[in-house]
Every structure is written in C-alpha cells, then in structure tokens.
Length: 219
Image (cartoon, rainbow, N blue to C red):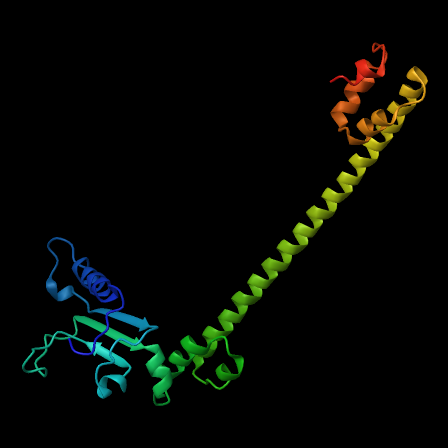
C-alpha cells in the first residue's frame, strides 16, 4: 500500500478486535439480520499516510468493505474502520464543528487559553469533568501530605519521648555506677552514651552482681 507507514502492528490489532466484535454478537441459532455494525475508531498520535501530497492533506479516514475496481459497490458498513491522524488534523485545521472541537480537546486539553475558545458543549463538559478529577486528585494529594506530616510529627514526638526516657535511664545508671565503682573512666561514659534501651536495662540488672566495670561491660 503506497505511502502507508504501519506503526507497529496496530492495524492488525485494530482489525482483529473489530472483526471480533462482529463475530461475538450472535449466539447459536440467532438470525444474521440481528447483526449490528462494528465500528472501530482510532485516534493516532502519529502520521500514518504520508506518501503523496493528497495523503498528507487528509487526516480523517473511513474504510469499509468495497469492491477494488468499483469502489461505489459496497457490502455496507457492517465493518467500518475510522482513523483520525491527530497531528495532521490539528495542523490542517478542519472546518468548524464537533470533530474539530474534539480534536482540539485531544491535542490541547492542557492549554486553558486554547480550550476557552471551544464552544462545543460536550467538549466543555469533558473539560469540566477533567477539572473535577484534577481537583479530586489535588485534594487526595493534599490529604496524603497532611497525613504524612501528621505521622512524621507523631514519630518525632515519640522519638523525643523515647530519647528522653533513655537519657533519664543513662543518668540513673551512671549515678549507680559512680556509687558502686567510684569515678567512671571515659570509655564507660562513651559506652553509656552509645547504648540502646535494652543494653541500659541489662547493665542495670547486672550492676549489683558485677565485681568490676570490666565484668559489667564485657558483653
């Protein structure tokens, strides 16, 4: 097919699922007259047809089952594939109308000044919904930030409380050691400062049975 750039296997995937929607409509014994048209709509973020000038000047495509030699002869639109090349459509500037409004939405929904000029009501509703979702997301983000800040504050307070309790335990143990063994050498002071709560508790339990500082701090 001249001038066609297939981006990956999207076209095969699209046709596969399009045919699948048609083939799964009927159950056993149902009339084929009950079949409804299967219509595929693909919004492409790349240029698909770029071979000729005519291809480069067209952005909206519709493919149906037609005869190769006489394209006016069709089997109907029971299978229909619609493609919109968004980059091309935005660049070419389609006539005013719903399609142009939607293409502007898909390409420029983050640009408030551009979207302010779109008057198509369904697109305006879509923009309103996006703003609502964005607001909800911001609300969730702020709630998370507040919750995290609260947890951090509680954690810091608990750490300070635990540190205060350990400082008190160190001072008590240091006084007991001084009464038991006299002036304490620097290495004992350093061991007390570096100790955790469990070590302080173990040394306090052993202070009355240890005969020396070396024996007490051997572990």
